[in-house]
Length: 215
Image (cartoon, rainbow, N blue to C red; front, side):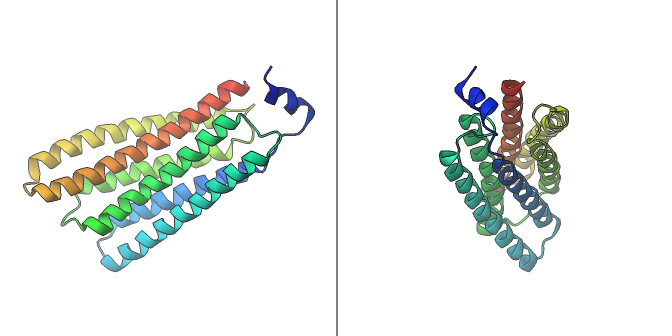
């Protein structure tokens, strides 16, 4: 029996972390929805507003993550292993950072054209974010992990779809795009979106690890 498990039997766990995890997953949902809207509209004014929305979300995510780290240092009995809390928080924050990375690349690179496949990719990321939110909201009840595992399975399926879409889109870009600079812009944006899908799956893997440890 670990020291943490021993103390949990004597002292109630610190539940203040759960709302902060939910806060971060809510921010991911909002950021992914804003990203999808960017690809659905080509109005520069609307896009400019969305770039700011996503940047603001990233700043809020950083603040929540820092709050979790600060509270973790002070917590006597966290809800699960400190290392897992650290890993979960860092990876949730990285999802938001990656979504912002895509938005800022669009803002700075100003690509002449964005293939329709990018919107489909953004849809997959948004759906994955919603499933992630479902799983995070169930994190308070690790003894009943069915909903978390079901959401994690859906995230895995969506990541596979995103992986297939990434490879087909990359292939299409190299066939169709004759402007080398535009090709570099689009390739980097697409790779950033692929990293986002992978990062969301990484969060789901962390959740499954946590479940295994407490079961």
